[in-house]
Image (tube, rainbow over all chains, first blue to last red; front, side):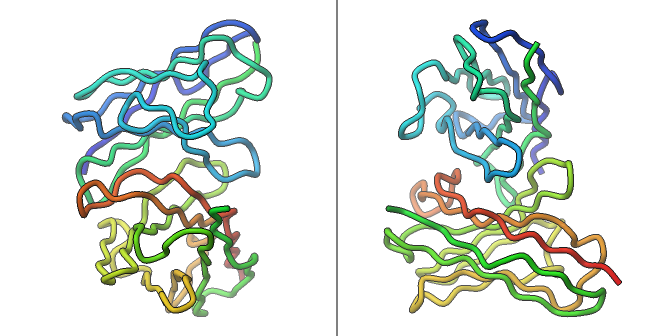
Length: 108
Length: 122
């Protein structure tokens, strides 16, 4: 089973600043990596797939990069609605398609 | 509009059985894999298993193999997850989610249900 490790566990950033979230896979998952956003009491929402492709209706301030074992989600200028928990997921080896443990992005 | 609508919250006793549902609409139900994700209170997302409604190909995470059963009725565009004997540790939010194929195989989830809260308590 592929282990996905996200860092940091919690990230405190001020509105308008840049946030950089990391995700590491225990072995190469190529570019088969997705990012999701989850707000309290809501279902997750797909942000990025294929490591760097934004999903439909996702604002351009969200960008993904990386391949192999190291991936990054960058939010260029944080808006109030961006404070949430973010998960990465690999879909290269299954079952299961494992999720990271999440990064909570909180207001500084 | 593409939607996955899940059945409502359940309160059960240990040892009871349960079947929750997830109805798809607005898309070709048999063309997309549909999976289930567990979220225990205050915790992260856990991939449980997935099914292709078109041919009933079903795969489980080793952590959930033998603990749950995933099925679907394509005539009514509905997927199910069921337990034969619930435990208190099954208390969680359960999400269904659908996603495209990569070749034949599943990939990420691009559409999610609203979640079904299952509470198991004596």
